Length: 338
Image (cartoon, rainbow, N blue to C red):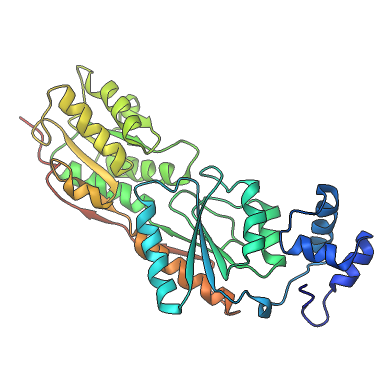
């Protein structure tokens, strides 16, 4: 049973007495044990939060683990993040645990019990937010957490690593404008994700600064997947006033655009230029090789892992780190046909 507390702070015995339960029961709640009734668990968790309980970081498990949590583990970009975490873990003698849970916004409730039992060195979350109750539960167990955030804008008290989405959208659109394109469509990501809106804002800023008025009918919100890119591109490219170029908010959506163009008999880049976003490995192997915005996913994961280990060691660290994006020009863009 873990009964370590920080000096001068509330003890497990005091928590147990206030809750009207035994010290072993409080310890079970702390360790994510399932043999505690939900009402008792909620009462103990509430008292831990009210009293600001923090378990001693000296009570870390013998096997050092870094846990990384995704909402879709089979995403094409997930491997880039895993490799980044693996690199830092290997250098520090730690192992990596992979977990899939929840939606793109936050992990599901089943995850928190498992992580409390595993008691890793820390948790890296690939989400745009973390519910307040989960933050409190992790903090009370001295389990640090960092969000790798290509998707949103986390709260100020949540350590996070992101990338420059607005700059990426700006660079992609400026590239097309400099090639001579004036009628440019965009298929960004979901409307409720900050990264989608930031890339769209970058697109609009590039168009406006060039004296161009974006056509609202050529602005579409997608889902970052191939099928979504295909469906939205078909709607754009079937028009008599179709765009001469499309900026897709992810490489997968860009692959969908390439497929739609081919299905309609359009050649890329002779008839249609396409720019993607992320620069996942498959981008350079598409036909034609995809011009895209490089999002440094592996570097983001490495930075998040290093931040996590500093937090575990009790060191102060920056709350928000944003890495630069860059344009990678390949074969899917060219000046528009005469």
